[in-house]
Image (cartoon, rainbow, N blue to C red; front, side):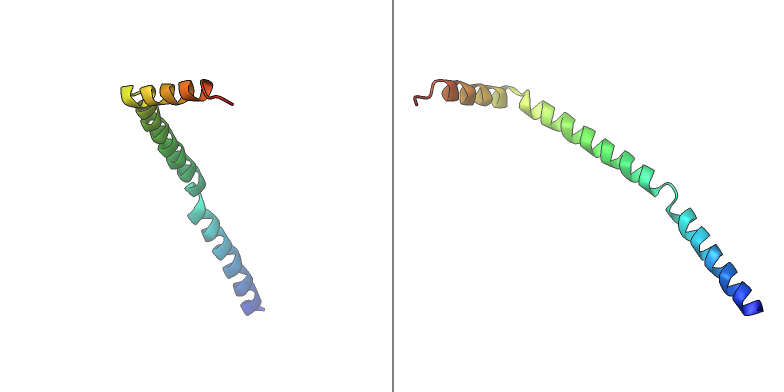
Length: 69
């Protein structure tokens, strides 16, 4: 009986450690993902609103609107 109780207690402690070990990992991963996404959005915004890229995008749109079908 002692071995059965010890095995069951060991399983409970092992599960509790596994839960405690992963606590907060999901939140920190989401936070890092959000920070990375915002940083990427800022860089992309700066690139698109720069003069050269803006002119090229305008030229592409003008060429598409003036295309003959």
